[in-house]
Length: 228
Image (cartoon, rainbow, N blue to C red):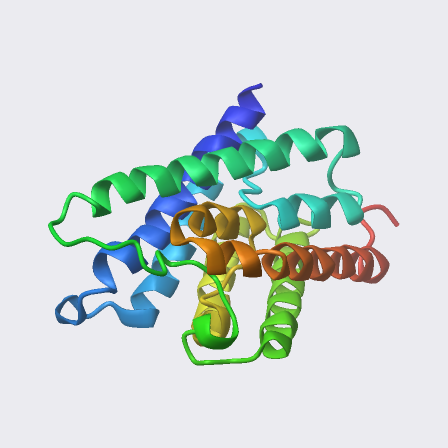
């Protein structure tokens, strides 16, 4: 249970910090954080939680990460669904708190609420195919970074830094395409508040990250098995 609570809190922080920066700060040009600021915010949430709860739960914060680690023989299958449930609940709680804060301003409208989308709901107007490719590839690379930096032969104590910076880079690349998911829990939490269009497109932000994570788990296990 302590692992599940840690995953709940960590994913809560990821959504509140990452999506919160988009909803509360990036929405106001005079604050000047833009896409770069949001990208850094998401990286900082993972970086801070890696050192806060990494020793408790492994700091997955993401169903795709849990699935990728399982495929790479780094995570026990019996813990997979409890972790995913804790992550989704934590993400929804984070989005709920963000909504309560954001709605305290007169004239507030949820609008996109930092949800993920494609087509008309892509920040740059990118197609469904572009979104699908982006989410598969970005999640694949995210899991390669995670599996590599947490390998028994990797330098100790630096995994959180590599993972946080990796997520920052992923956001810098893909915010214009999909608003960056690579995390089904994060996508689900925002879609619940954004409305019908976000829920209608949510399937892609579950399927693509999971596919990318599975591929990464298989590839990294082949490239560098934990035990020779």
